[in-house]
Amino acid sequence: VSGHGCERFERRLDELLGGTLATEERDVLERHAATCPNCRELLELARSTEPEAADLTAAVLTRTSGPTCSTARDRIGDYVDGVLSPLDAELLRLHLDGCRACENLLASMASLSVDLPLLAERPLDERFVDEVLARTSRRRRLDARSRLVAAWHGLLTRPRFALEAAYALTALVVLIVGIPNAPVAGVSRRAFEITTRDVRPGIERSVHEAGSAVSVGAWKAWETTGERLGDEAETSVNGVGRFSAALATDIRQGVGTLWTRLASGETSDNEKRSPAADDRNEGE
Amino acid sequence: LASDEPSPEEHAGRQARRELLYRALAGMSANSREIILLREIQGLKLEEIASMLELPLGTVKSRSSRARVELASRVREMAPSYGATS
Image (tube, rainbow over all chains, first blue to last red; front, top):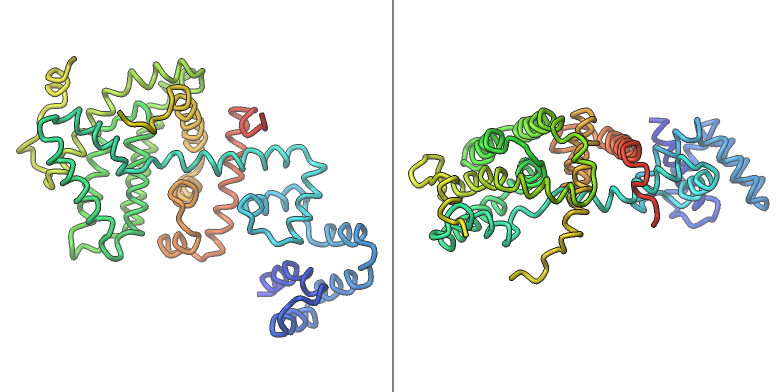
């Protein structure tokens, strides 16, 4: 409890000193300072050294930081997100100015926040759906596509389902879109089964469990094939291009089967056509 | 046909970054990957993740923070120029 109070106190110290806090919040902080020797000392120090801003910062820094890089690392994520308090942000900037390692870390984290969302390609991207269905069944394309979209739409807008589904869907989408050379057929079937089982009314299955099963499956799959990526994976643009093209057919076959089955709303093989046969029909 | 299709270079660049991120993620613990998946990839709020995983918000926050730092460090090790300003 006192740890939380101290954190809040430190976060609000600037505003407390500046007199910009609401009375209620100020009272809370002052009550905390009255019972917490460390925070009282910090407050007194801050008040007594107000004119000398640089000293104050140094004093605060020595009081609020453990090993400095470790403290910086704890806060750097919030800093990237822009939710760090002004005081902490200032302290962090001071540290970054003098620490190359943390500065590099900050740059990487900023890039991550741009790149990571790329891993979640939108599952209902129209072109993607078209491509997949075109590969698997050109004749039934429009019909199947509208059913597919309707199925997903219904699934996603079902009350209480959206949040839970997000987890399973992310795993599913990451799995089928992003993982090169994954044994898509096997794992996708599992993902598909879990996802469709969850939509059935009356079954309150733990989505956490389901999601974990999917993501564990996905990562296991990736790990076993990841070795084979070897140097090719981290290569040049050309290498990656060739690599992707070579795998596209395999991935599409697996994905096509999954989506087609989903579109037809059943898991039976009634209307399923062999992806290999589609490829032959299509060859142009 | 589609006007907003990325150029081949763009596509390959994205693909290369994906590969890098997957490789980095693959080396992380399941807990860390889970948080990254939900928070950074799916964009869920920390509160949503906490209720979904039935964990205290504070735990989710600190896990998320640690996982991001770990991922950034791993990526940087694998590709030292990652995130460098061009």
